[in-house]
Length: 233
Image 1 (cartoon, rainbow, N blue to C red):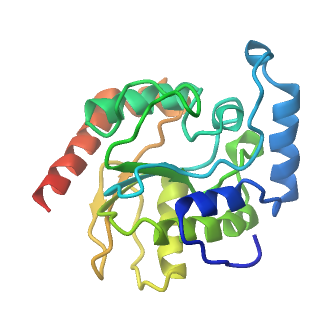
Image 2: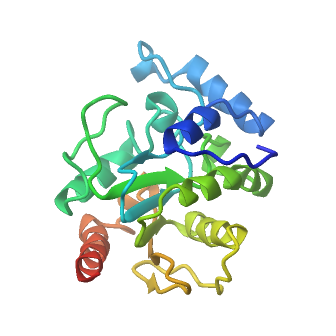
């Protein structure tokens, strides 16, 4: 995305974002994955487009991830849906009261996020889950506009260092003077000028959850802390 149009609603932003073709490598990969599919999903029509955020437009909590999973969000069209990351994340959000149920299977499945919105620093699935610097720069303009349309945010939970750093860069593009912070799991940072408090967690990827680097108890502790802070506001 080379220009920076202003959108009046999240729906308008999402409609525009899903047609983005700014990154040739990501366009080719997302469409290749959607065409070849995984054997287990051979009868599933893949989304195969950029995956914008979703949730409560009046949310106080933003959950910020990295990028769609190849056979998860790139298949279902909803962040953290249809793969192991979502199987870990949504039950935790439900336990904390941020989701109406513990399972997210596809767009239109009836699940609702409660006082919570989620998106990623990259809207398209990258090869090997690694968007390059230019691709992240291209996508940041979407994130910047998405943040501008979420005026009630009081907490941002960044899942992983790339999301953590990407959020701080987005704030700077919005004109905020934000100091540098180091990513540390479980840390919480108060930001200037009344900006949302920034929380950090290891990403909910299988690489982290299957190895025990991130456990359900660890993630619940982060969400419990966020919930308590929101209740004090």
